[in-house]
Length: 459
Image 1: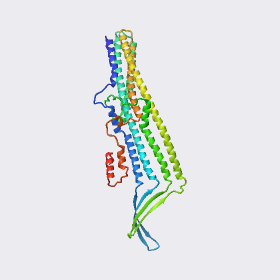
Image 2: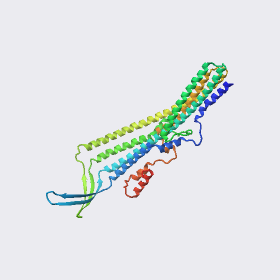
Image 3: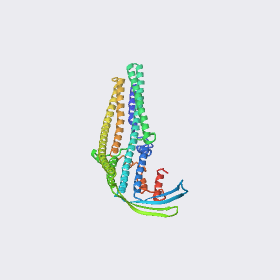
Image 4: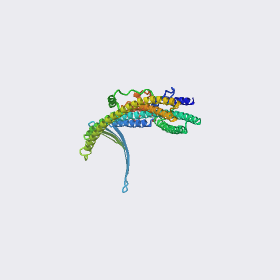
């Protein structure tokens, strides 16, 4: 019978939506490919790498304060008088040297502060890396989800078109009323609207993918088995306390603030410098000198005391920031854990919903062939199955997203932890090249820095 053929086609085509997330060809783009692309494409990562290199240079500049400062001075002066016929020229050339001998550790503390700031900035770079990778994961899964929804709704629309044709044929022979045809027409219009909305969601997802990865998606393969997270919420929080870059960065900032107090104390104490100069005038008379200079503050209007209080306040603020950051990270872990639990429960419920909707749909079909069900009953059952399939696709997407979100909240969503197998940016390479403050002149250190700059494309 025609009704049986339509019913069989309706079920087989509706079930097509279940295969929307099935494995694709081996040449399809993988989730790892998307994350690698995002890592290489991200301008945000490049921006923060440059910020880190600027912090590396602060170390070099702090080291330079411990070294001799050699400078030259050349001058020439023409002396004349309007009231007397006297004029002459004085010319001088001098080379001076200054060397800090002792300042109660103030300059060395400056070096340590710069080094701790570098380490804090590196942690910030890791945080940016996690955000970039998670954006790629989210974009990848959104494209797959929305593609599956489009496929499902296209299948649904084709099936309703068949049902509408069948209803019209049956109406012509008097088996059904005009009402059955109108129901099918209404449902077809609704299906077209749903398909248009799904296609709009897919278009937006593709744009988000391009922003995250640097290119539009092609064929996307199913995501692999997600990485392991933790066995319990407390275990996840313990990992986050040890590894999350936000916490580690806040800890470094506390150290910087504590060093700042010691530096403010050193600024209140004397400084001993060695000074020397060699000079010659236009008559080649030599004038050389060498000596020690001891200087220290007596009264500066309260500036130094204010600087000390300011350093202490910054220390207190950084400690409070660490406290807040730790609890915020723990809250994020808890939220991510709850989101994963909800997603897993939703997926299990969706599987049961699909199973029940499939059984119900088949039953309504059989009853319709016997005349015990109307066209509207078949359409409603088909819609129930469609909704169940769509919910199942979304639930699976949410589950995988929640897993990667939990990894990010634990501080583990990095290229190294995920084992993406690419050469990553080495934050120590530039630091090692500049930490000893190499000069522009040819030297082993300068040559090393030149190589690093060339690798970064700066020369």
